[in-house]
Amino acid sequence: MSLRSAFAWSLTGQMMSFAATFGATVLLTRMLTAREIGIYAAGLAIVGVLQAISAFGVGNYVIREEKLTPGTLSTAFTLNGVLCVALAGIVFAAGYSDWITAGEPQVRSVLHLLSVVPLLNAFELRPATMLQREMNFRVISLVTTARAVMGALVSIVAAWYGAGALSAAYGGLTQAVVGALGFSIFGRRHIGVSVSILGWRKMIGFGFQTLAISGVSTASARAADFILGRILGFAPLGIYSRASALTNTLYQNLYGSLARVLFPRLAEDHRSGIGTSTSYLKGLDIVLALLWPLLAGLAILAGPVILILFGERWLAAAPPLTVLLLSQAICLCFAMNHELFILRDRLAQQTWLEMIRSVVGLAAFAIGCTFGLLGAALARLLDALLGVALFVPLLPRLSGAARRELFVVYLRGAVLAAAATAPALAVMIQNDWSPATSLSTIAMAIAGGIALWVVSLRIMGHPLFVEMVRLTTQLRNRISTAPST
Image (cartoon, rainbow, N blue to C red; front, side, top):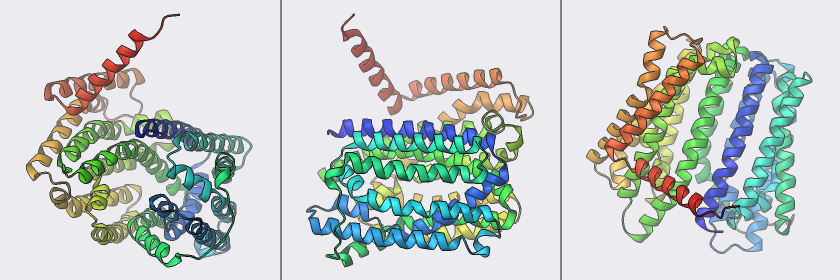
């Protein structure tokens, strides 16, 4: 499969999975109470912390291995199996701890259901990893889409029949079943249960490096939800989780898709000796031009967005949503820093920086929780600013771009965000920031913002505008050359 086809299938699968997950989130939020959602979020947070700690990146080791032998694959299966069984046992046992569950029986039930997921994931590793190694993203996209759709359907049906806090847990279990079956069917030639410990030390060493880079930050994020639930209770956690879930879903899907497309270009330029400054600046320019206006616009319209999507009883999530969206926008100042650390072979430095940020950020979040949901969200803003202080000064050396060039990119992104959000800001100020601002008025403000954004892109001669013109021309040519029926 060509790189372009792989990107197309990967992006299509992710967007379809996003649509299913987002739709289920909206419906479940309307069907369940804040406490029920908070109970599930608490259980998921506990599982997330344990998963992050046990995430040794075995699949990534297999994918990046130049000469993959059957023995290495068997060792990966063995090591992953041991980790999955251990994780399942710990999650199941955690359900009996009153300190962890806060004495809530439904948290115990959520943990017991989710403890089955690692056992199913153990059998998914070999076929799923080998399909990715072969760049068979068509099959991967089909399975991930089916997994997301089936999980969403089961969650919604379970909520309809009164499963309450367990609804999403049933959906998560369904996703694991569909994923294991789907990858085992389409990747059946890669299925195997042979065990081995050949080369386990090297694999463990790689795993600890992966854990140090991504596991700590992921565990910190999940631990934050657990802390909020213990300090403020399940209902406030449910409200906060709606704001954080909406923010993270947008950020991970949109920014994640862009980063996956841009990283191969950075790597190619680095290998060829051209240097990464030009491709990094162009990539950052496009990322900020797309996401800063979107995140800032949603931050301004947080009240109406919450009211439209989730309903009036969830309006308390609007202030945290505004702050979290702005925090994510600030984090984009050091977008693709991880990719640059990889290319420069400076992962050890990134590890220490991420650990500092995670520890300080988690401590700030715990303190912020004592001041309520807005205090917790403001702690995330502090975490984003700390990230700027730690990573932005390193970008010139990592990317090869001059500080002035980076400043120009930031300035262009800020101007585009200001132009795109000006109508929405004016409308919300005029309506005293009322969440009940009419949908037609908001729609006109959004349309006006998009128009100003496009005009600003054109005036700047922005790389994104050039890409938009190129894609439009290609689409027009395809339509004009298509055979008539």
